[in-house]
Image (cartoon, rainbow, N blue to C red):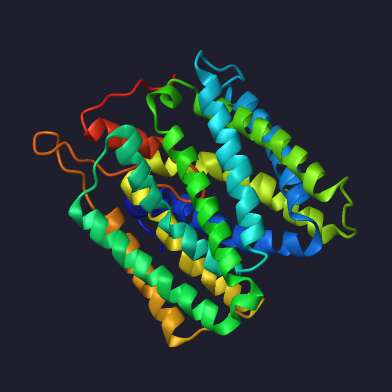
Length: 342
């Protein structure tokens, strides 16, 4: 006996709502391990350059297919410049090198704290203040990350480069946060998002190539299909395909619920790291991950206070990259009405 049409409709609606969420979470959880594999097969600088050279072509093709065009509006240079330099050069240059010293899951959990520098920069640049609950949740998450790093340091010791990995991961997170806040500004709101992203990628790729040439010399590409399969996965699946899916989530679920992708990614990335990298757990490490996840959930569940009280609003929340829509929502709820893109 077949289910009634109403049940089929409910199942289809549920799949449409949560299918992209699960897909984006699984993809972004896996990219950390693929990056680790890339470092073991090739040099970081040229791996980043090849990844974003392919992703740039894919993003421009996506713009053409969607009918967005490639043109930007006046005032694009600061937005594209900061996006390219901070997101597609600084962020990934530091991430790839951090994973030379830390397991992929550790770096993924660390990036779950991206909302903390987002909050600080949102206050300084956008004038958005965070609630006490957000601050408490962030503090709990930071305590969890510190426990995780204490376990890593005690296990590996300074000779294994744990301190270097932590510093590089911190720099990567700060670079990503600057890119996030840049894309939450009114100047970025005036630009069509995907073309702006494509041009930022293009600029970042050029800078990545220059850095790779200066630091590593001319490229010596690895043999075998595994390296190139990983580059293709990171470029097309991890960079191009997930953007429409994620921004669809922002539209259907709202920025607040969609931001739970950033909470779901770290534990899955840690599970993948355990299976494929042999990550060794301890009570301290498990407690650190649990504290970090609880803190992030508390912080993300915070609701901005209305303008009639103190005009407080939550900062933009994001997963792997800038979530400009979240910045727009926060701005609207704080009494701002940034221009919507066509």
